[in-house]
Length: 476
Image (tube, rainbow, N blue to C red; front, side):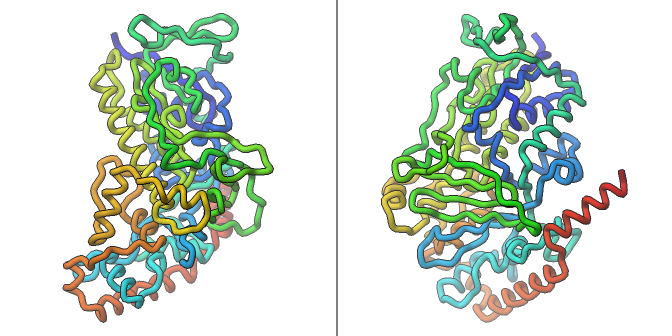
């Protein structure tokens, strides 16, 4: 048997991304999409804020910045400002890209940690070119050299327009759209799906099925794969979502503020409130969700993608990233014939490791927070997963971070949150002793001054976006 037919169920960002990527990157496949409406709880399909990895996903599909940003009404973002997560500490910025530069071969963060313990250094994000740019409301993509050569950036999506772009791309590359609603799933004796039954009584069959229907998991759910429940660590289970108030000069920085029962955020295009129903309530009708992940996203001939595989609150915006990562992983491991248990097992190992590490990064904000109130006390009272506990033990001792194969957030991101929330290592790394405090201080001062000079002439986000739009229209 050769793998020829793939059926994608789900009509949100996850479904159309899956269908378009499969057909674009493996053109010999017959890809059909059943564009079922995704529920509000399918967070990967409704959260507008993304990670820098979306740009790589776009590149693989041949989507340039003109199509992926300007023509979809999306905007650039450099990171997020966190407010009130640790009482008594100022807000901090988690931006994408490096902080500082090594001095005589010694990592910058070790030198900064030593100075921070002595109370003689500016905030860690002061030494991030992306954070400084974002705080100033300015934006440029990375250049060829200099301080602005290696920062990252992501997108804030206009979700309806972005979905229309994906739909048009999928149709253009040859994805076939199957109208109708799902009435049932027929399974074979071995537990695999044999066919989908539509509301008109017709049947559609494929060699491989991609479940992009959100946490309902309409295809994957009936296969009864075991699920890992994360609610003891992440008790937030309600979300209120809305459009942001339009502004003439949007910021490339989201604002994420801790509240009595969770947190809320505002971005250039969207706002939201996330909270625990056991600790608070909202006057608006909330979206319900439950944090957790299936242990076998690839089971038999069904692959769960997006919230059908993992559901996580949108803190740090990993939702759509995990869907894109699953799509990339599936294409990389696509079987030549009938799905083999070894391929499925390796897919599941990688997917679960990545999901757990994103969970740990989200949980990091809670376990290092210091706030009063029942919600925050309840979160602090639960021992974190051993994977996160190990990371914190290692960092709190000497400022070191472990290596993880399936890591979404790089070392710079972990450092931005750890230092931003006031977590300092107990001991100075011995390597830092090779650079005197005076030399380290002078190097930091030069670096900070260099950032200030580099960002001073830059355009605002609105000005950059307008110039890019004019350029595209001139080329059209």
